Structures are given as C-alpha cells and as structure tokens.
Amino acid sequence: MCIRYYQGERLYLRPVELADEPLLRRWVNDPANWKTLGRFLPVSEQREREFIEGLYKSAEDLVLGIVARQEDRLIGVGGLSRIHAANRSATFGILIGDPGSQSRGFGTEATRLMLRYGFGELNLNRIALTVFADHQRAIRAYRRAGFVEEGRLRQACYRNGRYHDELCFAILRSEWERQEVTEDEQEQDEDVDHDGLPAVQLAAMTMWDTRVPT
Image (cartoon, rainbow, N blue to C red; front, side):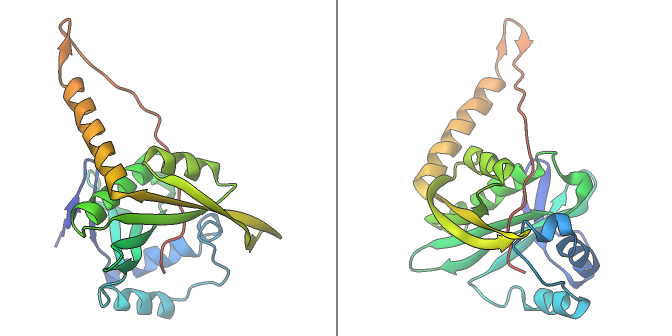
C-alpha cells in the first residue's frame, strides 16, 4: 500500500517501514554518506532494525522517508529531532542516499517540504541544524532554503585525519513565512503571459546531505 503522508511537487514523505531496512543500512554504511553524517561505526542489520522499530514512539523525534513521486521510489530520509514543545524548536537533518537522485534538486525540495511540515503542521518557531564548515554545497543550499548562519563550533568534529569546524544555522517561523509569501508571488508572476509568451524561470538546484538521527 502506497502511503503519501505529506506531498510536495516532485516528492512525498511517508513513514519509514521495516521493509526499508536493507536500503537504509546500505546508505548509512556508504563512505560517501557516513562521513557527512559524522558517523564512525558501521551499522548492522540488527541495529538498523532497532532504530526503525523505535520510530514514532516518541514525540520528540520524527523521521520520514523521502520518495520521488514519478518513480515512486525511496531516495532518502529527513528528520526533525529534539522537538521541544515549550520552546517550539527542533533540529533538522537530511540524507539523499540514492546516488542516482543526488544533484537533482531533491534535497532542496525535501528540505523545504520538511520546513513546511515543521512550521505549518507542528507549529514550530525555530528549526536549527549543524553542517561541516567545508561542506560548501550544503551551506549554499541551506542559505537558499532560508537558513541563517548563527555561529561556528571550532574543531568540533574529527574526521579524515583532522579536526573540522561546524557551522550552526537556523530559520525562524517569521523568516519562513516571509519566504513563503515571496515564493507565492513569484509563482503567480510565472503564470502570467508576457507579450503572448509564457514566463519561464530556470534555476540551478543542488543536493546535499547532512546528519539525520539514526
């Protein structure tokens, strides 16, 4: 049964199921992915199954599968962790694990979809994240999504034989709302013909991955 929990333009979000375990385990054990996730230990089948079985039992963490609508295929996971009801805050993480779906703009759309869910459905006021300071592709993408840099954690993570700084980003509900209004106005403008010709907008989209609770 196909469950489309939350839909976007090219993607939809759905619950993560035990049947997804082999695919998720392959992604998190891929060196191209686990280094960006800040992981050091391999993940076994038992460990990944325990993780999936523990999902949706806590109101403080949410992980959803990211599915490409056209192919109806799981391509990644996104999550909000440390959801705090009083502060109305959470920490964001995402992984586009499928290599064929990377660098196609899916990460950007999935991030915006998760922001819409966090602010529009969970009534959050602040969503934060951390990213390696040398992960320039991710940083550019987060800025485009509306995240604002708030600080630097010096030599906070050790990987590839040396220490790396991490950057702290966050987006507030008011900033997200202003961005949503701007995007709605742009979409309305694009629907209007000018001199009998349709308006066309081209955009360079990128994919990034960063840590997601696993």
